[in-house]
Image 1 (cartoon, rainbow, N blue to C red):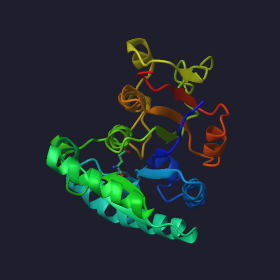
Image 2 (image 1 turned 45 degrees about the vertical axis):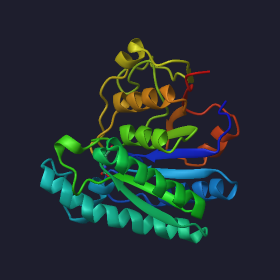
Image 3 (image 1 turned 120 degrees about the horizontal axis):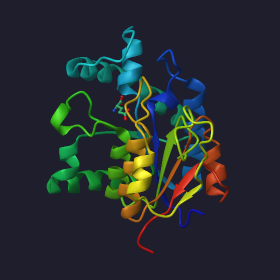
Length: 261
Ligand code: GLU
């Protein structure tokens, strides 16, 4: 059971936001915007970490695949990020909510002064009742400074803003005993008390073709967040209304318990 849910970070990956064609899954984005708007209305503060800039940009530019070179990724991200924010602004706007975009690099979080500035900005956005939408600043980030995956970024953001809950929406139902695509005996693990080395080994690298993350990065994010006292849930993002079920105390996805109690 999630407790004291007041400030949530929701992370949504490229595979949840787009179709196999690389184009936006409009129905999914609309539903996500609706559910998160409803949470905001209920008094919960929400920050959304959204991937998709590179994948959506590549599709919009008519590229047949996600670019592998850094300038190509940077350029695709400039295009895709606009498209994403346009959609979020529209969808959240329909429910009377306002989005603010934050594009972050590693140094923004690691440098104490920039970190403080960033926290101030988040706090002000929450005070204004706006919803921060975060992505890595892919257009200026190069190898050494990139988080590289938004799973990790979402955990860093959750820690930064003192969130109590991190929800990672994925294209898989949660954390399984083995890769369900390869092992028919794989079972979903509903609750994890502590992420140890055995568990980390169980998360093989599963990479979708438009995003960059896999179960290993999600587990790493869950470890970082839970160690900072943040309950973390990995769940399927195909039906955003499942977030209601989760917050109602029903079993959804895999719940990694916050540490330190
Ligand atoms: N920042 C990347 C993007 O928006 C996504 C990184 C990831 O897939 O985790 O395309």
